[in-house]
Length: 399
Image (spheres, rainbow, N blue to C red):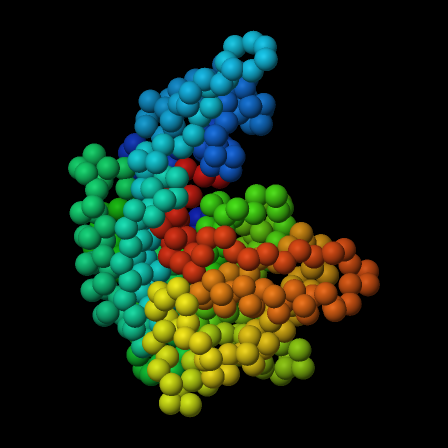
């Protein structure tokens, strides 16, 4: 079983830890309701006949469930679409204000809280930078942020908030030297129960998930790469991490660590070096600090970084080499469709990283392997925060 933020073993609920049982009407939907909602989410809109065919339900059973979901305010009936023959087809889609999710992303350089609706649109978001994650600062921000998110909703909408998702690096207290954080400050997280602390702030159910797993889930459910079935997802953050999708399902493994690309041994460093030691933003940050440069832009929300950042070309080469090594290794074992690269990076930097990865992939030795596609993530730099807000919606309305 995966460990929670205090290092204790926890029973996973899906790929997250759930803090409290769900109650009443906001609880887990019936299995077939969740199947239908998941199917519509994947396709954006579907008519009843297609839903019945895809789920294996009879037309009558599908109609009863769809009508109930529409009555509950979760589905929106579209305009009839006439075909060449027969009755017009009526498409159904998710109703944006049918449900909401609040998410808290606890990162090594920032904390962010986000509110999204049932269709995945970000309604509001707050963000603060910090030098390192501190327990007291997290509690203060979470209390302020949850209150601010809920204040943007009407009284009726507040009743449709499904819960609070928390996405953070598991074992956040480790790698204090690389993170440039005081070891004694990070050690507070080791015995700290994050979901319990958030539960004291709100009566909503709380879900905990690894930050990069949450980002991968956001790409899977809301991203543009719906033609891919199997891929490795890589998120270049303060520490590089990732996730794994197999047969269009998030695959976390028996212990919740599948897709942990940051922990992969780097070529020639089996004695202790990992990919995160050569392909993380903290390395560029360290280079800039040694050169006397301001590093605040690395963890802000700027759309572009300054031109001629010292050492950035060498850093991009190192990241690209590590990512391609990870992609080829995963591909050899799993026969993947693609590698998706996302990160807390401006679009131009991500594009340059993709270009360098593509060049390395072209010269890679593919003997005995099929081709491998390389794609950029479509959710964006806030994928971790977006994914945290999506956790309650996944828990209650998806398979």
